[in-house]
Length: 156
Image 1 (tube, rainbow, N blue to C red):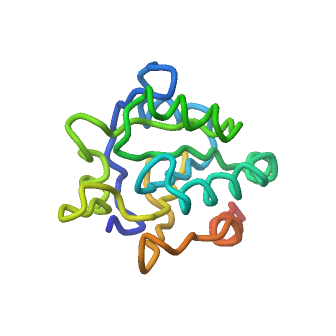
Image 2: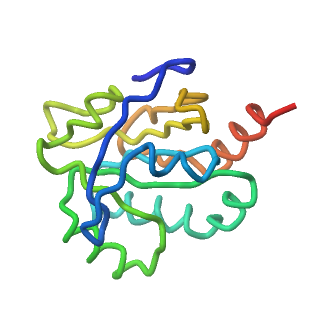
């Protein structure tokens, strides 16, 4: 998995609307970007994880973070998933080549064909400030981990 102090690999992926979004675009806002790598849309654990993050999305924004989900599903699947859940978290499709961005960040499971459940916080300078990988894809990293990372890496 990508380590803190590493320059984050740039990417350009379609969001749930089919609009191409790059890491550079996300960093233009001057906030920390938290990349939420998750296995698959519509799975029960992923549904729970994104619902939890949606509940605190305003607080994360106020704390200076922009959250973005990334999985190997297509943009069309992301749109249906987002609509089904009623969430506003942008979802990026790491669809083709399948898992290329997840591979760059060291969180793709080749044998299963999907991402590990992982969080990567990239600072406005494009450098990874913090990363976390769940021990198994069934374990949801709580939002408290993101808040703790934001606090630990806040400007002094």
